[in-house]
Length: 396
Image (cartoon, rainbow, N blue to C red; front, top):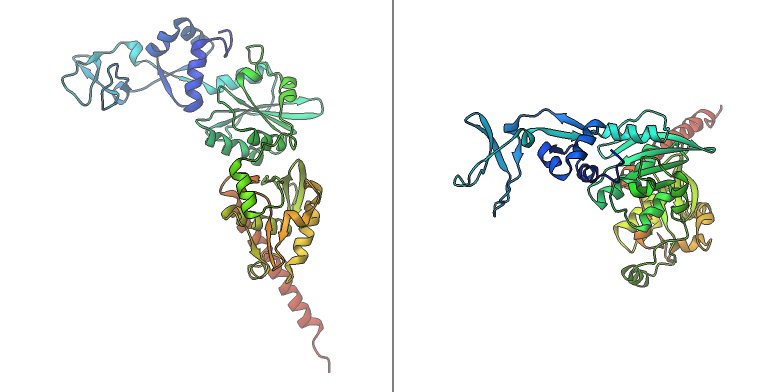
């Protein structure tokens, strides 16, 4: 086996595995593509024999009809045959051992090859059914994690890639290897780069057609965060005119908590830490903007829902604006968190420019923060009440 890129059978198998990691292959299927490749993959232990019951399997129909179904396998007169489940007039196909012997691709063997070739260290746990931790490597003073990703489609890839930072947060750099998947949009890649994540297909990561990762090459090719944002679409431009957004700033909630009662966000190309009380307010405004493109909330509603610690929300909003100024494109906090002059506030950028780790995260995190801060307020109010009862009693 020369490499994962030069062997046509390896590429065929890995392409199938990328979409469905537990897919099985018959010996006849693989042998038709490359008998030498099949022997090579067996020798290199990339293929494992999969014990199965033939009568529980199906056989691809060589003459598909309008039903579009595979043939059932049954034992007739001592031999296995593929029988059409719809039409009894269709002649059964007698199956050979090559049609019945099934193999599965050994993902652990692939991880081991990559790990050994690049001298990666560390355990290789399964992050989830689509992400596999390969190992880590020290590059200068930085620690890089290497992950294998197997995705069926762009939506699945985007969701899982943007959530990696929540699962692996102790590394200076993370490299995600994708066999053949065509990467998602430049905006998603820029958001990943803001989380110190590089995404590369095998042909980019292994330029010498082996399993050696060219880390330096990947670093040179990574997108420039904060510089190469995509031009707003015509629809986004129309929304800006209709809803009169004042900014084009990009806000990304990472879901990370660097320390207790602290939250990490990216505002354009600037990383900013936000305390819990200000985070609840910012998250509230973001959720409102994403639900409806207008995005306004009233100061009365903020007080009623106890989104801020104070009876006068303007003070909390003023502190939040000051916190965000270092990351804003024009440094104007009053434009980014806009006031309409009638007691209403909103984040004044397009909803598409506000992003979260995944679709369920904002509501879950909002409820957690609100509950935690509410309990804290109750404790302080209870302590204050006990203090007043103890030290402000009239003395006779």
